[in-house]
Image (cartoon, rainbow, N blue to C red):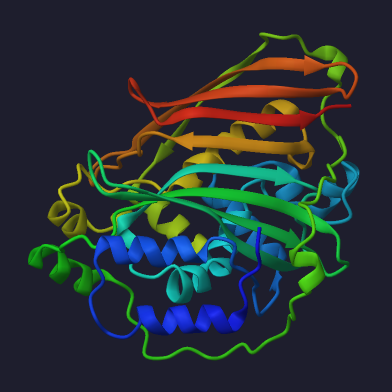
Length: 364
């Protein structure tokens, strides 16, 4: 992948931000040119103990490694570890530059997450100062049967000791150049978060050009306190579990993740947009799935990989809870590596919300 220079990026961005409204084809052409662009986020993200607990609460994860230092140490961890999908908190911050300054022309509410792949190198933990390298990995412009842009972004995350922590790939679908209905535009203006001004954190991280062009890390986490591989069988089923989501859950998750998209909390916006109801965050439902798996495997730090394809949102009514039901089974076991793959199914009623969801786990 060719690294585009900062001067080239600024020239292209300047052209896009000239003030003229771009057509879908112009937006697509600009985004295609950005494939291969890589940058390091200017400031590191430091994980605090209460942030770990807030996120665990938001994904309904009561595993002791997220709550009690004593329990975490008993399971082989030096401090609290973050839940497997905690990266969603960092991801929004890390990709802000990508969607504000580089991949421009798309409104927040027009972008939908379709796939998420998380590859773990070690668990995120309290005290980590995380540095993130971001890139636009691929892009495709489709014009039939409707105009839609498909793109994949990648984050490679490191700690302050220059050790890899996680590599993520996020697949997104966006509808460029949509004409916004005046009612929807007014609704958006009324509910989008308004800020007078923000402080400037400054630059604490400087990019390593050599690292940006290195192959992706391949390190994998240990088993920690995961269950014994020899106690598992292919086809073994996980105990089914139901999670309930209310508007309160959605609002809390939006605050924890720093995601201001109004489709998660505004009836005015979803009505104007022609949607059935407000919807749960994709990473919120993926987080519930990780909670479900963690209860079975014994230690969430043993996740090696977790992949989800989002096929249908979870709709949350104003006057009731939305029930999300999880089932799963051990799909495969490898005696040489003592790893296993767990496949899960998530449903709201009879409707599947994941098209594919599985985790690779390192067992003892």
